Length: 251
Image (cartoon, rainbow, N blue to C red; front, side, top):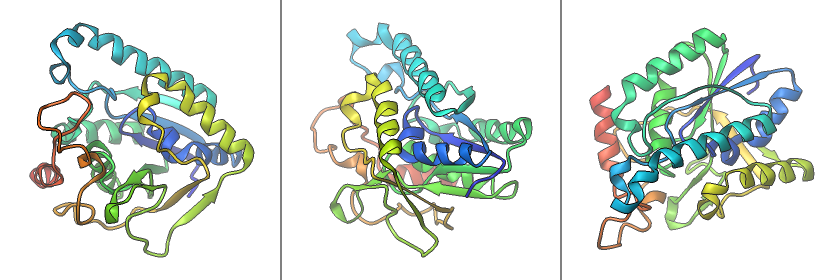
């Protein structure tokens, strides 16, 4: 799972910590360079926020990028580019994002890609998995588990379905401490990262997904609070079916 130069597709700044902080350290210890492409700003479009919050939107984006750069320095990760795609919008900007990913591979001479699994944790994670599947003609692609809701329970660093190729990394005490430090650098996301596990990380060669269908039956992780009867900035009201339709249109 370690190449000479590894490009990590990061849907939101903080996913590099959630999914692969320890793996980044181990890859670097093995002599690899690890490069980051941040696919979205990590912040929803300004129109999603309450009217009185919108004037601070640019500040939110700038803060998230400062946190990402500080985290990259801690982990030894090289930021390559931050795309200006709002969170929850990656499915509608697939062509642009794929072009940037292909340019990143060419410019950095990456020989491997890491990306989130198709697991329904966040719609942008699933879109990133779809993008990664379109890079397999260039380089090997490995995927990491973050979080999901398969079977109606919150799952951390565990794929919805195992296929026998998984490699679970049991984190050492030092790796767990470093991961907690990296999570703490994302102070703007403190309220959203309490579910993150720090005991292990899980990788495998990217599975062959049918992106025309949701990642698993039942609710996706991001649908858990869609029972709220009004639009709230912190709740993503997108459905997996909508994501699948967007991916199918790309195809």
